[in-house]
Length: 79
Image (tube, rainbow, N blue to C red; front, side, top):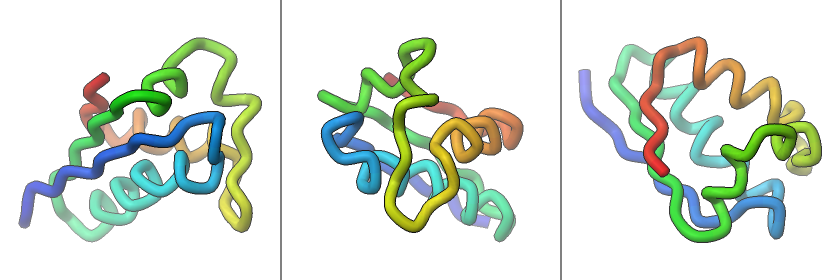
């Protein structure tokens, strides 16, 4: 089992790229690894209440569902 750090720098400015660290972390958790997510710059706005409803990446599930899975997995999110 590996510890993996996923870094996010995009938020509402690019919903597709904003979703990637969380989707990667969710996949790593399912594979038995210990993921962590660190958010910088614009990505920190994703943690504001209500913002998750407005983000929808192309080809991905709604961000609010992806974030809910990340939280349910117990993955630490550093802002």
